[in-house]
Image (cartoon, rainbow over all chains, first blue to last red; front, top):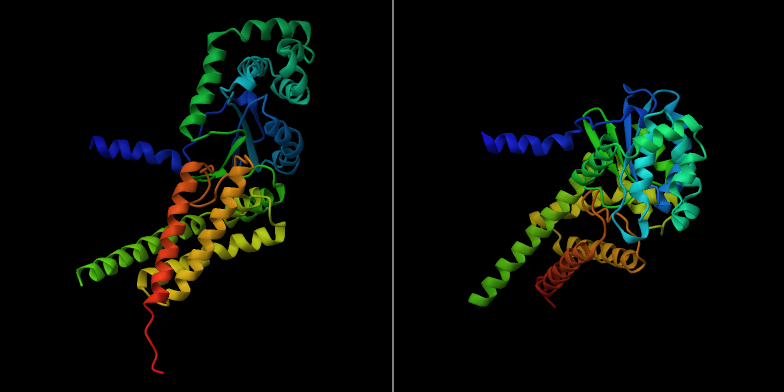
Length: 196
Length: 146
């Protein structure tokens, strides 16, 4: 009986059990036919490329029409070259709580090379916030609940087998597909349009 | 006599084992949308999109066909040669990607498996097994009367 329960628990993720989502980091209709979960790291150049080149196309073609619900997850890589990733993830998650996730994420990716070098993460984030928002975000970034949310995203990624960024999962009905290649939008479109 | 029987048993094990692996690899790809395998092929950055799409549609069926032929022990020289050629091609491409530091999916058994020394070791072993099987199939072919 215990074994059956364990097997069932192990199988559920493969069957596309809904993943947790922070609504403040999501875009589109939550009841859309597709859901795209993105695990990324603000210091990762490939994540920058995805965020700046591919994601706007996905949002334009499918987000507005309500066909895809896009959910962002933090996956700050624990590598020496990405020493400010987690700090950036805390600020972005804190900014989500004041409705500024997209603006902060855009800014962090746009100026990735600069703050990655200088370590001026807060200054980068603050540039797109009002003084009142800055005060709130600064306090929220140190809130254990925000830190726990980032860790929870990271743990979720680990459970799903994420070992590089960006990692994408497309859920359709009861099936979840890990996407092996993020930068071919033609194939992504063909897949989404092909699935009914 | 005992050695020849042992070799025969080993070859049957190799043939059925390789066949089962190919059928499994094909099944994993065919149950998912073909675009997922196409994305894996595309990540190697060696083929234009049209060829990627064609390969993604054909390779799983080819894997299924040669896998079933190997299990059934039919047309062993042909199926063994195709399996060896496929595995050798996959292995060389994976080796090239690994040497270039490309952290990409190998695409062997569906998405979610990054190329590593473990996948290279596994595929290298499969290449050796396929070559051995094919060589034995050619060496043991029935002799025709002069």
